[in-house]
Image 1 (tube, one colour):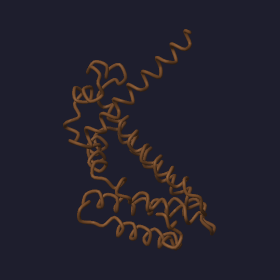
Image 2: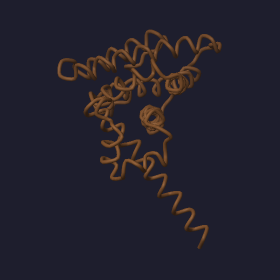
Image 3: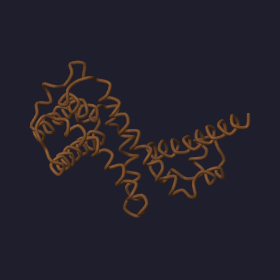
Length: 212
């Protein structure tokens, strides 16, 4: 019974910690970083402000954790979308491109949340390190996709291609999220497919599954 109680307590504490992180992301996405006070985060999560100090040494640590969690969720969702559709290496790249540029991903709230974290990335060394780790996670996804494509590529070339693909998708995601009403998602997806296809020397439009 004592082991069961300890397990239950750990699970309960982890859920409360996740609730605080989720609350911080939601508030920043909806109202910007200034609105994400300790009191507001605690209220959104349904806990007392003092409980935040039990899980995080300060608000900066909570902010870093929230940023890493948000970016990790985006990376995991993209990987799941790729893995859900069987196909060859070129098809997987095409699915990756279109998934990043879907309205559900290319979304103003996500952009606002990301932008809300940028000042901390510039001013906080620990936050910069967190940003670097999340960036590398995205680039690693691209490197894995590119390495599986036909044709021999050395490690340096794969990294360069992954950096270029990531930058192009970032730009389209940013503009598509910022100008949701003005830019057609299908047009942005077509630009992404053609642009990434040109970078990698493959026909991504032809490889895209019909259901997408």
